[in-house]
Amino acid sequence: VCEYQGIKIIRIIHPMVEAGISLHGGHLLWFKPTGEKDVIWLSENAEFDLTKAVRGGIPVCWPWFGKAATPSHGFARTSEWSLSQHRENENGVIVTLTLEDNQDTREIWPHKFHNQMTFEMNAELNVSLTSTNTDTQPWSFGGALHTYFNIADINNVSITGMGHDYLDSTQMGKVCQGSDVLTFSAETDRVYTHPQPTIMIDDKNNQRTITVTNDGDNAAVIWNPWQELSINMADMANNSFETMVCVESTIHTPTMELQPGQTHTLSTRIAVNH
Ligand code: TA6
Image 1 (cartoon, protein in one colour):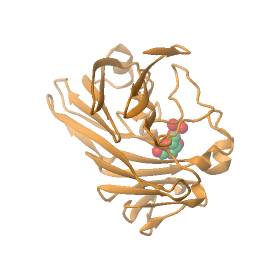
Image 2 (cartoon, rainbow, N blue to C red; image 1 turned 90 degrees about the vertical axis):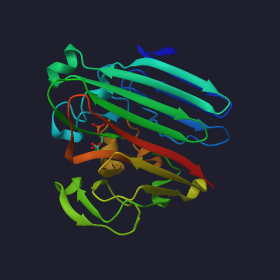
Image 3 (cartoon, helix red, strand yellow; image 1 turned 60 degrees about the vertical axis):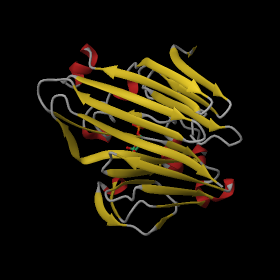
Image 4 (cartoon, protein in one colour; image 1 turned 120 degrees about the vertical axis):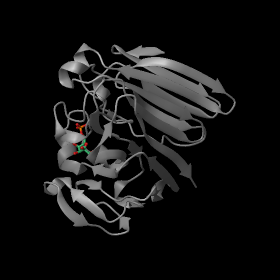
């Protein structure tokens, strides 16, 4: 564990993989299988500040997605998580972090919970968020594993497996129909409501595809801010939208209800193929 601007980061160096996980936000910051380019994008202008979410990596949006309430994307991504377990052998590394309700979280969201993030890292990355209702009343939640992927050039990337039906967040959630193969030429911010279990990012200029297999979700979000929005974001360099795309394992609408003692796991598995 090292510390950077007050943020504790677990650095993983293993023959199969290098990775970094921040306790602030329970946030994976980088992931690089040996011999591969970075799979996850981290903004060169990322701000490491305990009051904000880091731009890039895999922010944990919970217990809601987007602007459903304040703060945007929930409080998990700006909360301090605890390291609960670390195991490694020749097959890879597993790190688990936990976050439970405390006075700060109950002021924002008045429920008791136990969350566990599990990061299994080898040539692949398997990230899961297991939420348990430790309260005496049921509660509902949404959220996302808001993964930022590192790509060579957004102008030469295509994505399949998102399904057809989506809500367009750039048009106030208008219901739209898309095509099988998705390419990018402008700001894109969409909630796909019937994604396939496996989504493929064809990163042509890197001569690789990334497969994203989500589970426990009911939607897949895709996001690229394009130039104008990036210019307006202090933690993103003006042209860095060209090398990132978010594909997110998401619980959108309807949100998920958990009875006392009940558990739910939201996950994303990420693999690189040549
Ligand atoms: O998942 C897409 C999205 O909700 C976009 O609307 C965009 O705002 C993005 O997430 C980033 O949100 P943030 O709060 O991290 O700036």
